[in-house]
Image (cartoon, rainbow, N blue to C red; front, side, top):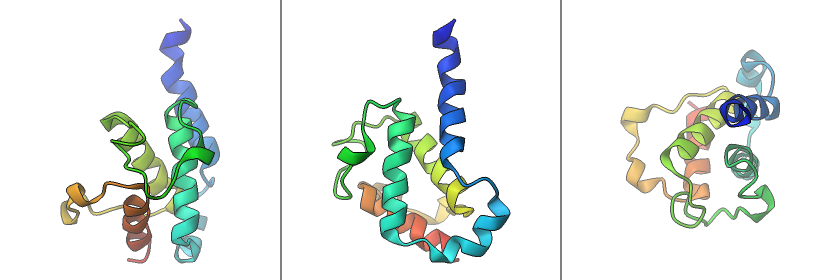
Length: 116
């Protein structure tokens, strides 16, 4: 039974790290720095991987899929959590996902998406 509940627990933990209201994020979103976004990505990675990867161990230069070993579901969950936290949506059709390899690349993409 516990194995059936883990997705619910992960989702609950991800949203508990998020800011509560997107409307308040909209007014603050231009205030997020790339360093803040990188730090939040590390937190979301820790939650998404159920603590397998500790946020303190995540480096901006690390490859999301290679070095950190995220699978596609981990990557998507982290990405959606970041979008929710920022209150900004990445226009997926305008992104060459092959160039978004590292934590810093993802933070840069998210930084640009919050600015317009």
